[in-house]
Image (cartoon, rainbow, N blue to C red):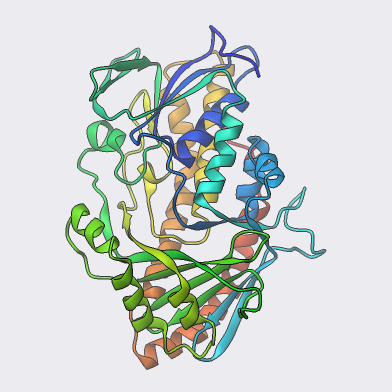
Length: 424
């Protein structure tokens, strides 16, 4: 791959997770051929975090991973399991609905067609990291904690806890919900707020003759939460089990860590919520799950500041919200659309200031993010504790809601933001 060009931008990225890595790939892919940026990524952890649960990569997410060169690597390594359709169950009465990814001819959605992929966060990150290694213009440095961000009319400088520093023309804050970029520079007063729900997840090894009630992925609604059960590899020898449920605020990050470290307590809580399910495999799957983790879901307010003159927030750093089925795809769209706006500004000869490209991106993106934020509120309501009557109403509403919103979902799934008109 081509090295950085002397005429390319000098870009700093805070955050070595999926958002920061795909931002680096997108800025490289969409840069003018003779102006490839020099990109330095700084991650606070001692190494990229390849642990975590299993995520659903929707067709639009896979399309963008393909554009960025990561999907072929994921396919070659046989990471993940393809989802033709997602099944929705009431744990007491049975199947409620399906959400289809296979398209009218069974090949997927869009042109070219893509289905969905259930994959661990670790495997998806490994695929992106391997794609990143093919670009000489990108470097990733781990173990860097940012203590100060200073911005001038011409540059942005990061100062690190170890005494080092880095200076660039552009800083991308891709450092998640507790973003140092946002809290130290862009909008310090905009802090993460606990949503009221948490995700308890782990992995359950199963025997070959173990019977499950789903083809690949099932969302199982109960009176006191929602349990996701899914295969995530072609072997089908392990099931991802994740419970999204209403949990009282513990009040501190250390408190959450302490409670989350007690896997037996988390398992007991899940059994208390879901063991009365009439679906036979639910209780044994919870019992078989190893090393449960409890992950509180934090959010940001719907509106907020995304940028200064030379600093831009992307992904959860800008607009964290409860999971609503398309979160990862939204992050990938952020990175590609921002990169296209920045490239257009460069191609126009860098008129005025870089903020012109930032404003174009925000004008393009705000409406979509605000709509997704409203959708995420429905998730919180749906997984919150309910009595028998409330849950019964929920089982009638969910199929109707999936039908009512299917058109918008399909529109998002087939959209290719690498070619959509960015209006700039």
